[in-house]
Length: 76
Image (cartoon, rainbow, N blue to C red; front, side, top):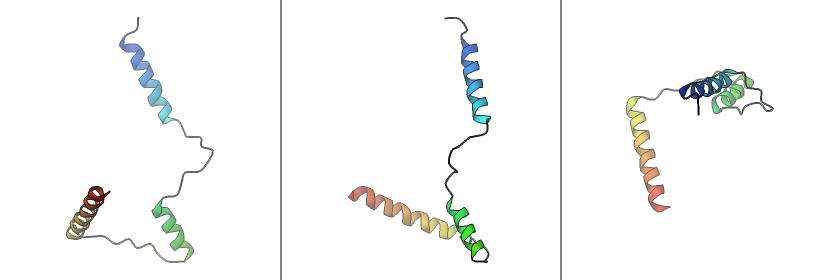
């Protein structure tokens, strides 16, 4: 087989170029949670106010989620 690495380079280049092309989709992509929330608040004529958690709160949430996940995995 001739070509060696040049064929693999061509295949890689084609794959990368295909990824750069505009996507032609039949259906629109699904809406994300934040987009739906923004649309809801906009229709209610309000403002979108996202709260920020402190580092301590994030750590507490993470510990709680990990405990719950561990409990679910061990029982189920």
